[in-house]
Length: 408
Ligand SMILES: Cc1cc2nc3c(=O)[nH]c(=O)nc-3n(C[C@H](O)[C@H](O)[C@H](O)COP(=O)(O)OP(=O)(O)OC[C@H]3O[C@@H](n4cnc5c(N)ncnc54)[C@H](O)[C@@H]3O)c2cc1C
Image (tube, rainbow, N blue to C red; front, side, top):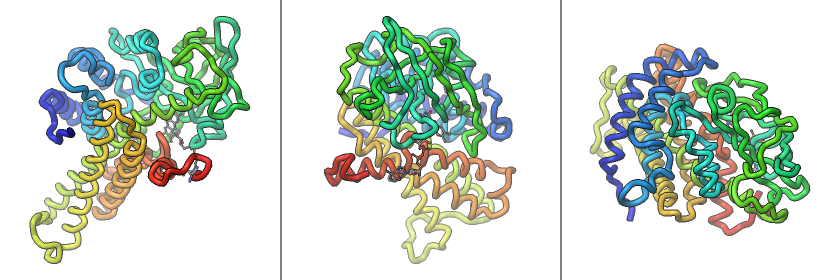
């Protein structure tokens, strides 16, 4: 059964994160937006210590196994991420710990690999893990990746280029982290050749070649990575070490990673949307506009109707997130609902942030407030972890019963 009440243990952590958001993020949000390649170490170090104090790695779902009661790892994460992104979505992406890379290890690694690769996040120094799928010629069509992995005795040799890797600099250069690189062991096999490999910081042949200058989430680094005869140990291939050539297990692992992370991206989007709506209502209140809830719609002003519609959008999108993370915690297949939540939250945050800027006129457009920044931060939610169009395709295929080939 789904319980819509926030459990006490989550509420307490969320209260702590609200204080982090108010005191460590909002005051410097504008600064890090305008100084894109500076790293918010105060936040990173604080969060690392706080997460260790709360129970090692408490922003990681697998830690949940150690708690009593129902499994709530993904639900906990969704509530935490929403709150951190309410503070600043770019900062949230600078939260130390697993990130996308750890999600890939959790979705595809063996128990031994999870222990080996994830334990660094609970140690004294903060660390990051990124995931590199996208290449210069392909993003949505993940099966078209060209980065190769060739076995040579006890090692894999990786060659290729990855672009737009979130937190790649922090994972490979600034901390002792790793990046999960998706490569093909058989370029002619398409999806069946795809496998995830862990490339650790400091591995010769793996270099960060470009830091992107971006529209939004500018506190978060996004990089290109070149792999040139990059040798990694044989058992850094995630999952079974048996390398059967014709299996889509690797591709399914990528999709399982997205099933886990799409609802969390949605939670982040909705944190931005809530921040925007709250500020919008506050600003309207200062201009004497209050929302008269409970009146018949015909008696409301246009602005009141708009705000109420935005609240409906936000709350209904959040229900999709809750369902998607609850299913993930229950280990129920959640692909459809995960993609639905991503589509909806991407739409909702884009609409709410754009409309807020419009409604506030010049001060909405001005850098004096964070509204214009949140509008820029919002857009990425329609792009990474599967664009809006790709997630719509996933939903449509599943509802209509079409294969990938029948509906692409
Ligand atoms: C800030 C940022 C951070 C990122 N972080 C990461 C990361 O950490 N790791 C990583 O691997 N990647 C990351 N990405 C890359 C991101 O996942 C890709 O940009 C995304 O998957 C889209 O791929 P593409 O850019 O190649 O666009 P394309 O696939 O070329 O798509 C271009 C447009 O065409 C549409 N389109 C494509 N195919 C279809 C179709 N079949 N039907 C309808 N429309 C279609 C898309 O929706 C899109 O609007 C990041 C990107 C950004 C901007």
